[in-house]
Image 1 (cartoon, rainbow, N blue to C red):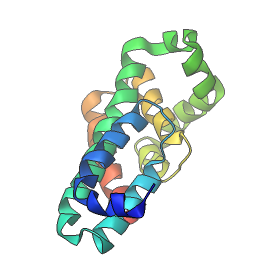
Image 2: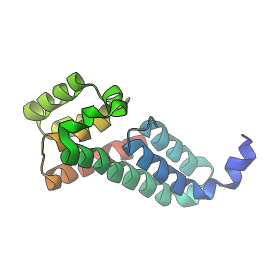
Image 3: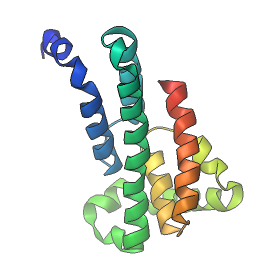
Image 4: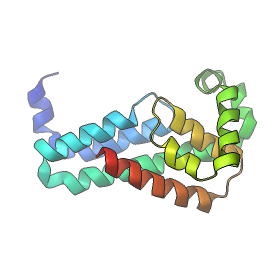
Length: 154
């Protein structure tokens, strides 16, 4: 693609970033870290007047997209492994390991897990739903973890 195209449409980047975060919440392999860092770069160089819009798109996109795997785990539970696509994306042994971390370390699991890339985050949120973590507890702890990690990376 032509770089001039991106420069001409950089003022709409916050909408694109938010949409990509929603797709990442559906376990489509889109790196949240790349989205956050790219947004920070855009905010500091190309569209500094949109810094707050980009940060809000990053924060709300990351935060709200976390509710998708949580809801899927809470609503559909272990029936998810009957879906071939899902069973290839999320391995049961990884999910059991994360459940163990929730029981052992509690909310600290979300705080530290937010900084681990490559699908670990979605597995964290899915296991919170599968483990029937109360929504308010999940939303509060994930909001704090999301704010810390996104502020750090942005």
